[in-house]
Length: 110
Image 1 (spheres, rainbow, N blue to C red):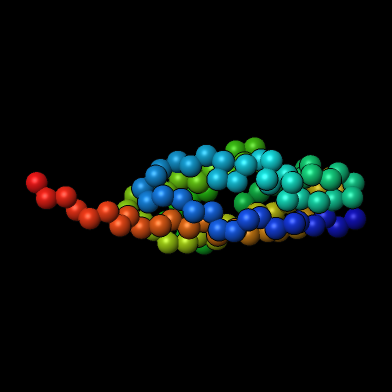
Image 2: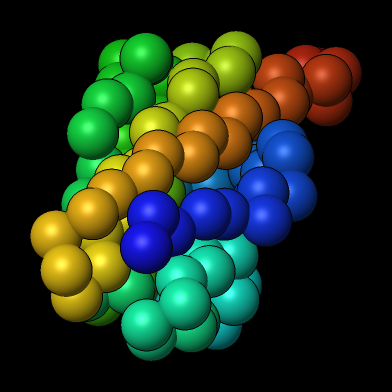
């Protein structure tokens, strides 16, 4: 049977120039988002299909957890699309926005 997703919470907000952010979406949340009659909560595979703005933030999967690295002095929103595949080779996609908020700290005079 065709798998389905419950929908990831949206968006994920990361701090400006925060570098590597591990488990932006935890493996538990990714696995709990996936539904399938044959193997509920256990997708055979999860891959990133696309990212709209890797110049702002670049995301990678670490197992079934999503890790994202902010790019230096960049802010905005990047949409990440994940593809879930079940044990029978059927698949479904889901997307989440990763938002980087700008630094609003006033410069310090010396």
